[in-house]
Amino acid sequence: MAREQSVLLDAGDIFPAIEVPTVGGQLLKMPADLAAKWTAIIIYRGDW
Image 1 (tube, rainbow, N blue to C red):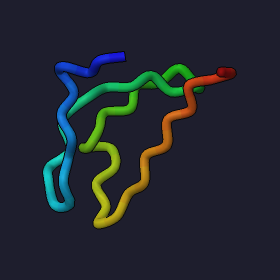
Image 2: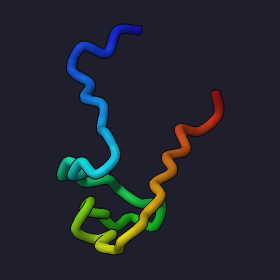
Image 3: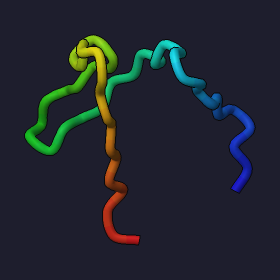
């Protein structure tokens, strides 16, 4: 699968602003809602 519009981030790059729905029905606004020095983001895509 080609990812022509994907942008790879390097260490120190600013995370792009995106909004993701949570399991609880809320909206997570990244990176604003995760304003910490270190953050790990794990996206589980469901059953493969």
